[in-house]
Length: 228
Image (cartoon, rainbow, N blue to C red):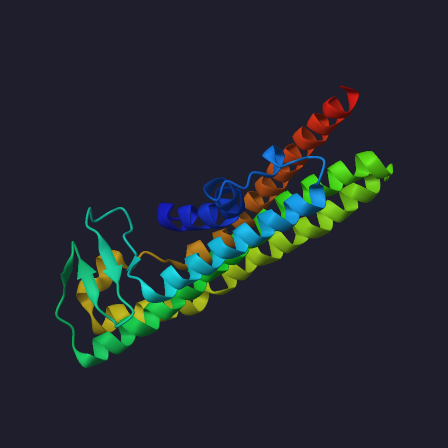
């Protein structure tokens, strides 16, 4: 898998914890005596971050730099190809293909946001389930099943990102055929599509482990507080 696609899947799979940190909504630092209220507040904060992310993806320039050219390469919503801040000359047909390709990039980016949303939801629910279990005496196996069910949503979201790649590659190749100068920035290969699923499964597992760790820390903090 190329480094750019590996980075794409990595960022998407870990976006949940990144959103929480960026929004100041780390589950383990929430008020452990009110898990339901904390979870609701965090969900509201994350929802705001998601809405802002989708807005920026839809309306802003998207950086498609592959790390090899040393240049900043962007696609605008209007179909401009911008290299190092300078719009490149394009024909009407090329612009049409640039807009089409950008639409696929947007789909992949939004799939990454979906992974982030599911990852954030997993983290908050894992903490809430763990803390609630302390006070209700809920069986730990039941809590684990609930958290695992939420983790499945992260895996599904991660794999959906990979499902967008074949159409994206076809669009990329049509663009290169019509605009050969775009080739240095066309970094999606067939092998990336095959590798994406393995990478997504691996990173979604890491997100699950991270959520479990957050839940364990919150539960321990709650136990310590109740002993005082």
